[in-house]
Image 1 (cartoon, rainbow, N blue to C red):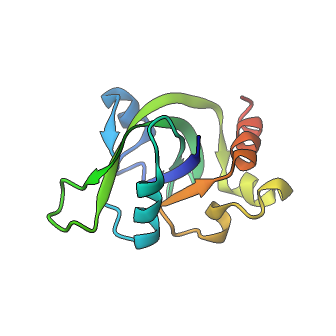
Image 2 (image 1 turned 120 degrees about the vertical axis):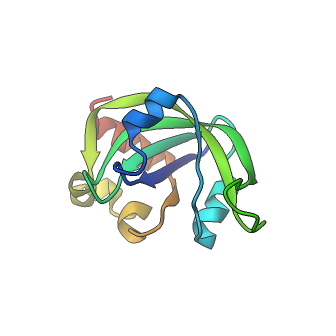
Amino acid sequence: MNHWLVKSEPFKYSWEKFNKEGRTFWDGVRNYQARNNLRGMKEGDLVFWYHSNEGKEIVGIARVVKEAYQDPTTDDTNWVVVDLEPVQSLKKPVTLEQIKADEQLKDIGLVRQGRLSVMAVTREEFDRILELAGE
């Protein structure tokens, strides 16, 4: 199993709205590296949900329930989506400030490639964030 992180601006699509809907496809990715990460996602992989711009914190865990397929919001075949479903909210959100201050997370993509919207997370990084969240 691989681990990932996706970013969403809460005013556009929040963790709360995602939980109410119960499933979504992750669209709108127009960066090749982020697209390649979507293509790398496999059914069952776990995904951190990060609120960007407002909050700047990891708030929950989602699961990949359908692997990459053509983005239905565009005819351009370069772009794909995956389907996600919520798994659980974190007991305590983990802020970007906490992540930056944690020596074990110094190499996480969220810090190194701050603008990337879909990124891989190592198992060690995933477990450390869960610790910080009180999980």
